[in-house]
Length: 302
Image 1 (cartoon, rainbow, N blue to C red):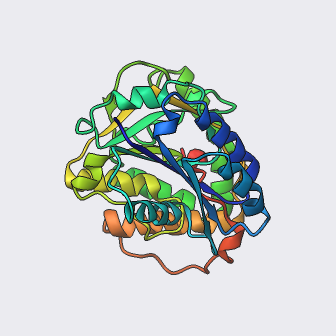
Image 2 (cartoon, rainbow, N blue to C red; image 1 turned 90 degrees about the vertical axis):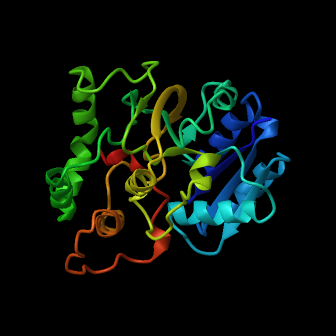
C-alpha cells in the first residue's frame, strides 16, 4: 500500500483551507493518506475555524504554531513532527492551501508512479484565471544573465510591482505562441525547477540526502529544491498526468506589497548566496514582523 503525507500551510486563509480539505477528502484513496494542516500563527481566528473542520477527519491533524514560520519552515516543522512517530512515507506533498483537487484519481495515479524513478514530481498546476500550467517553474538552470535579470527586478519595489502586473499577460502570450508545450500534454519531462505551490517528494529524495531547506522565510522554494536535486543528481520530473487547480493569490492578493517584496528579495538573495555562490549585497532594511505575510504564493514569479 502506498503511503502519502500531505502538508499544507494556512495563514489567514481559513476559507481556502476549508475548500482544500473538502477537495482532498473526495479523492480515491483518501482514507489511506495523512494530512497535516499547519496553522501558521495567523492570530485572526483561523485556528478556531479549522479545529472543527479538522476534527471531522480521522486522518487529518492541525498543528498550531505560535508564530509565522514561513512556508518551508512550517512544512519542515510538520514533517519532523510526523517522522518523530512514523516511518518515511512513500510520497510527501507540500502545497499551498489555495489549491484544489479536481481529479478524484489523483492519489491513485500517484501510487502508480515509480518512487525511485523521480525524486521530485512537478504536477500540472492549472492557475486560475489563465487556465495555464504553472509548471515547470524553470525548464533549465538559469544562466548568469537570467540571474542578473532577476536581481534587477528584485532591486526596486516598483519594478517588481510592474513585473507582477504584467506576469499573467506575458505567460498567456508565451503559451499561445507555443514557447511552452500545451499545459495538459501527456509527456513527462525532466526539468530544472518545480513550482512551489504544489511539490511532490518521493521517499527516495530523502533517502538520497534531500531535505526541506528552512533557512529562508519565503520565495526561494523553487531554487532550493532544484539546486538540492542538482547537487545530489536527483530527477525533477514535470508530470502533467497529475493535476491540481491553483486559485492563485487567493490569500495574498496578486500584487506584492512592500512586505512581500522584501521577503521576496531576501529569499532570492538567500538562494544566490547558498546555491549560486553570489556575494551578499548591501543589507536592506528588514521587513516588518512576520504577521503581515502569508505562506508562499509563487505564481506571480514567472
